[in-house]
Image (cartoon, rainbow over all chains, first blue to last red; front, side, top):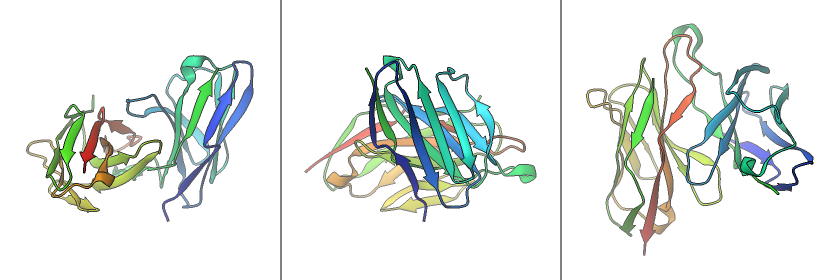
Length: 119
Length: 115
């Protein structure tokens, strides 16, 4: 089973709203990721969590706030977003972020995404 | 830095035609290579992968061979179907010791298959 689930599937919010995106996996993966994807573009990495700790923040504005409450869950809290933040938000997970002392990589598995529209 | 270059799309083919989508890469260490597919309105699905030179990844009739000498990972399918219409992303994840293993994506190639 390589399933990553995301809720909600669609979200429309105003610029003053607070909302959250949720991501869940039960594959025992210890690395989880948030990506943002604009139309006709590849995904852009936003955040990486490794063993429930934030390991990478790709200079994302503070109106996006990630949270990893346990090894299976990843949230993205949204507040005071701008219309240009409208995009597909993708969650992914992998066994680890890297192969550790031996190097190597682990495959990332993506969820179906949340289509966010900011009015 | 690491990078992935994919052929520009869109690519339009008739059903049962042969498909090739070119992908070349530059990397510091010993990357793993991936093809992801994104159907309209959906997230990314792993199509196939290869973790070392000369490995061949295959799935659903698609194949790609990791060619270190030409730094390439071209995607091929012998006979495409309408249901293969999607955007295809080539990606690498570098694997030098201490790397974060982040995915580097190509720009994507949109494939449209006509009946």
